[in-house]
Image 1: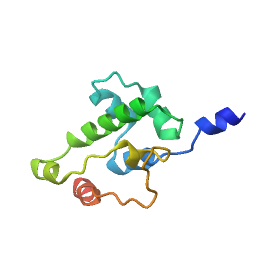
Image 2: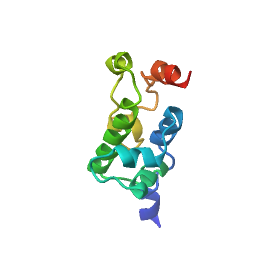
Image 3: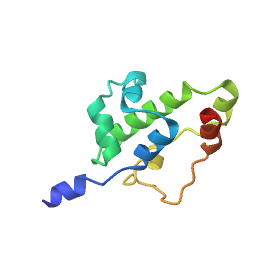
Length: 110
């Protein structure tokens, strides 16, 4: 029973950020060049513990999905997310971190 608790870490910041950016699992799978699956994205969002390589793969797909929606000017200002920004169990995670791309998000929504 303890093994299950250690692997299931609850909703991750990735889930909230995907909602804020208006992204769904399929968009990440579609843009990924690394054979990312819907199941892997769902596990990442729901807090199943992933390996570092898998966290990085999901993070790259997340960045590429956003990048494709940005204008050239927005691309200049875009902060590329790292796995520590998207996963609460990643080394270096900061719960008080503020997303530097909030202004770009707001521009895209309007």
